[in-house]
Length: 208
Length: 208
Image (cartoon, rainbow over all chains, first blue to last red; front, side, top):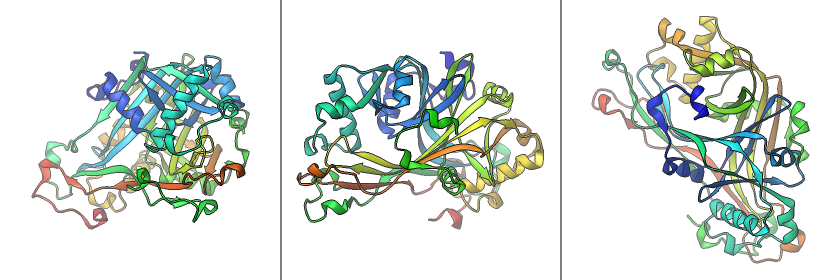
């Protein structure tokens, strides 16, 4: 892996299986796409959508970003899920529980309208399972206006930290609490659009 | 801003004030640092720590990453906070409420031990307010082993989307629910380290 020339810390945290990376990509509502233009780095937030072994991203088909990335620019797509704050007895040994991944390669534009529709379907269902059948699906011109990009999940590297803090043996007798504070993303009470109040009711698939 | 050559969509979402970027960096437990080595992009997750107008990051002082970035490599540091899922009546107009930022420039190593200690203090307090006074603070050798890097918050660009969906007027009569599902990061019930059970009690500042 090219990444290993840089990502050489905590080798025991490395994961190279598809199960781990699929879990990270499927669980992430955002990823960051690193690439260079004229030697200067950029880092765009995008929504990662996975179908089988392909990662899809989307933006406006008219954006400069889409134009640049469609040409086969090298990218490094990073996604990180935070699972917990790890408070060791020392500040130094404190850490975070996380699952992170980087996908390396080149994005390619999705040109087949059916493949675009499949990616739009997967994206919509990722945001809220059940939504695709309960919204107006994209028109042909909306699909044309959406620039989907794809990359095979082939060259990648994941890292996972889990479990309790690793305290120095000589720190164990210190009176400071040591442990993990779990983190997760919570969905709050849905807020109906002002334009929609009284017109519709909250669908069942959004009621949890 | 150099970024505007690429980030040219949704100009109305652009924010260039320090209040917005400070809020994003302070609210983010993770950021992603994009840079290139031999023309190939990398994208490392790091914890952003802000003091006044300076952004601090840290890693092992012995890592290849620290070595590379200490040399003044160009970086683009991205942080994104997700505030809500925006479900429009159409899949196409659906979106996310977010606050995202990119900081451009070159990182410099922090060599002054007092400045390192200040950054470690701020980092620890960011993770849990009250923790610095209630943990073993870094020794001299631990500070030496920690590679802090810093960058002025000078060249940056933020984007914010907030509020309800923007539905097409002709979609408003459709029977699909339209609105926002708020998102936030929740902290769960603290889990005491197995090595620490029965030895200490959960401090008050972690009890919310």
